[in-house]
Image (cartoon, rainbow, N blue to C red; front, side):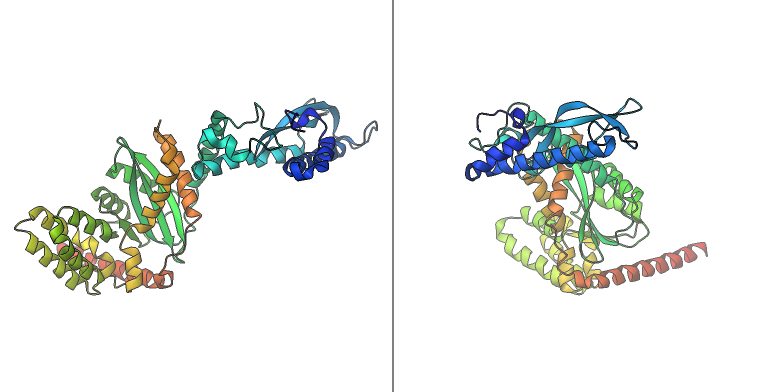
Length: 425
């Protein structure tokens, strides 16, 4: 049996009988041959439905038989050949067989290629990952297992998935939280991604945009796309960022200057500590942790300002860094959120975990040929990461976040009206 170079060397029924005779050594070949025989029977049934029984002029026939040809369909071990009947309609055009069209549309080989690439199997090792060299199912030349064939399938499938994802409607998602962060692919390429958390605590990859840097223009392009896809800019939400001024600027431009923005407290603490000598790390870390855990935002701000004042003489730059964006550092505290929910929303851990998956999936890529290539890989990796998403730990407390955001919006609107009235007077 191992002498055959392709499954069309003998009829599929005879192949199945031969495989069955040595099933202990050829069970996979037996399963494949059985499937091929079943597909052949389905195609014969389609032909009979369209043309009627052989050698009979059925009055309701829609086409006539027009010989046979060989075609290839995808199997996880490579492309396999199968003989299929051809039909020609009375208009002179070839008629498709529904069963054959359905089998080709399955694209099992493309799905296997996509899956293997996402778990870091290189294109050079794809043949070995789906077909054992000593197995009874051969993989001859033309079976679609070469590195170039696998790469083409991944490009086609990842492009289709990315286009579908980036055009999906967001109006049906009741999003309360949006996290935005950038990932540097190389020196001249940065991608900015967004994920959201809905009112039930479920996480959703939202969008992706490319740029040379994590600039306001790149973030603006991402935000505009999200709004075009149905994200209502008038609904109050909490935006969580890593501290980039470009991110904050783009958010306020599109969602209002009073948008609730929370800067990542972990990033802030790390940036402060990295600029200080090790002898000060423990004391500074203790003060920052105490400030993050306080329920009173005014007391927390006072604690941070006192820390900046103590460092100002010897470490003026670090003191300025502590005070920079101090309002956005304590947003979740000012909203009066419970401790557990505040801890979940005070950092960018959710999107950082996604970016970790992106780095893991993309580690086999040696060189980014273009931004579109980086977009395809990152979009596929974000969808891969979404398979492992879990609900927000404090999802039962999210109604408190909604209420706090609505109260904040109403309070700011009232203050703005009072200020406008005073100016007019």
